[in-house]
Structure formats: structure tokens, C-alpha cells
Length: 285
Image (cartoon, rainbow, N blue to C red):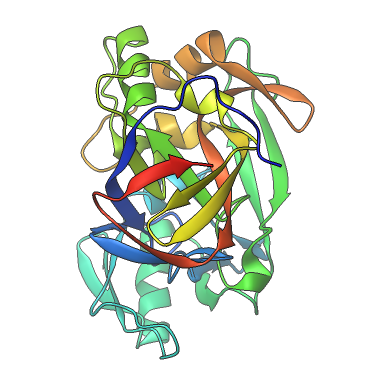
């Protein structure tokens, strides 16, 4: 049985995001297929640090900031049941294509200053390091933790859960609390952004356990999404800003894995696969 909401906001999809390569900048799409592993063709590829044997992400203490400057897009729209199309990436000013994996890895290795390999989810080590910056109120302050990539065997290098949803209400509320920060979708890398109109506040905090229809798919909301160093790093034209995480640690600590963590947005899993498009309404059961 799904949890009950006292007040169900009207939500429509504002944007859908797909990331061909883990921790590279991704692409906004008008529609997508939701599958058990999340958005179809989301994060099927990643860079493997050959020195550590771990997947690289934007949360890496030393290399995360650089990898977040790389960009990736599919040359054509992926089609279920067919091989994924070529990914075209911008790496330190160079255009690279995944069809030439050796040249791709060479360009990334040169830019990062360490030897890396392009790998596919399901056939590679599935752990990564995440660094937590020194922030007051942050339980893991100034620590590096190794995490498993739980969706890797299913074909995605998504961090913890298949989907991450974020509302405009939460972003607006955070912008009011961190008035000197640039609050934008790019900082938080959600799967789907929901437009909640005039609503204001961290609405997603109350959605855990709820079931909803979205397009022709059905989803179940899980834990609120803990935030980390990636929200503070420069990316997509926005500057480095530790105040984003400081504000969430001060204003929206929620329980996650037995710890009080700074949170924004909510995770979800796909109960019924289906297609979603910009403009589709989220309807709670």
C-alpha cells in the first residue's frame, strides 16, 4: 500500500535528463523510456581509473572536478533492442567518439593526468569513491567513502537508485535560503525535474513510500536524495560554491542510511515500465 499524502501537488515534467557517460555533462531530452534500471540509455558507460580499479565520478576528491567539465551526447536517439549509438564527447576541448574506445580513453587520460579506460555497466568493477567536503553539520565531513554502484549489473552506473526526481518547489526554496548561490538543475543532475507551479518548500521530503503514475509508467518513491560535493563543484557554467551544501546541511537534514544527511530531491524505482515526455503529469495513487 502506498503512503498517503495530505496534500497532493500538481506536478508536470519540466525536463528529462540523460547522461550517456557517468559524471560527464549530459543532455536534455523531450521524452524517454523508463525501465527498471531507470531512464533507458542513462549512464551505461563510465571511466575506470586503471590505477585504483574503481569507477571515476564527479565525487572523486582529486579528479571529480575535472571530469564534470567533460560533455557527452548520443549521436542519434537510442532505440531499445538495438546497439546504442555512438556517444560524442567534448574532453578538454577535443571531440571524441566512443566508437574509437582507445582514442577516447587516451584523450580522457591526458586530460585527467591518470590512465583510464572506457567501460560498460555490467562488465566492470562497480564501486566508486565519494569525498565529503568539510562542512559543519555534515556527518561525513572531510571523509572519503567507497560506495557500490547498485544498478551496474542492470546496465546503469547510476549511484544508488534508478531515478532521481527534483521539483521546482525545492529549487525555489533552496534559492531563497541560499540567496547568493546560483541554484540550477545542472548542480543536482536529476533524471526528471517536476514543475510544481507556485508551490514552495522541500516537497519531496514527504513522498517516500508513495506510488504515482508518470506518463505510461508507474513509480514508487524511496528515500530522499542525499547531497554531496558534486553540488558545490563548478559545472555547466556555474562557479564553485560550498554554500549550496552548507545550506542543505543546515536547513534540510534528513535520515538516510541511519545518518542525518543534507538532502534535496527524492529517489524512485520503476514499478511499471513506460514512456514519459515533457509536460506529462505526475498523478499520485
